[in-house]
Length: 101
Image (cartoon, rainbow, N blue to C red):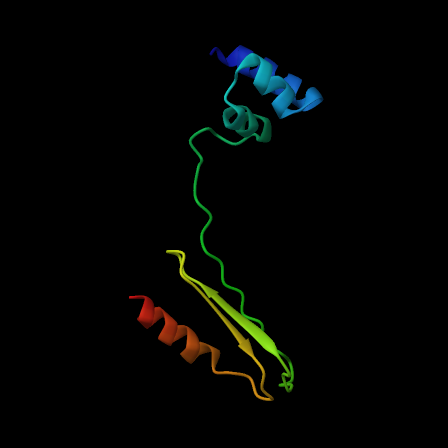
């Protein structure tokens, strides 16, 4: 499809929304969405896994907590912890990773 028609479709999508423009014109919905958002068509990367470490300012007694791990291949582990002291998170994670191999 010529670029001028894509630009016209993008302008319509700004006013009327993606689906009402893409569906009756039989346009690639995701292609129109990328153009509307100003992203190049070739830019398509999977999100990298993220890790967040939370460190308390002062160690506190934990009455109950839940530990959840999820691997990049889809394995999951959930631990419900009821104790006055926090578990050794690093050792738990390391043992689980070794078991997944």
